[in-house]
Length: 83
Image (cartoon, rainbow, N blue to C red; front, side, top):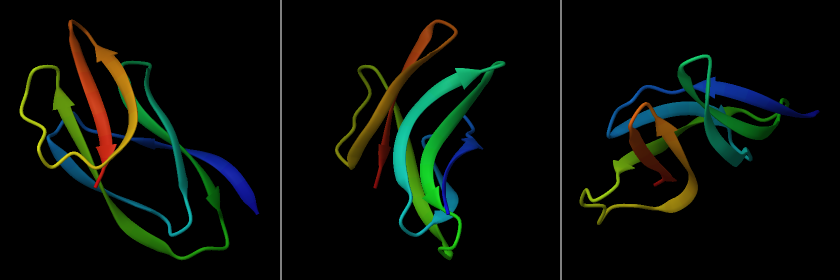
């Protein structure tokens, strides 16, 4: 069954998030002070690790993969990619 799920994220250069294999990453926004990733998932799929990267504005981003979203966290802006 397809459902939209939310996955809390840490403010880190990179992290692994376990998502159903066919998950479509929709956006990242801050909810109640926590950055969260929303994804359209098929709950019947097996989970697999996905590498999520965050880059601050002006920081090197040579390894950036597929763009997901940009979000503001306090005075900082982060640009989120899946690699």
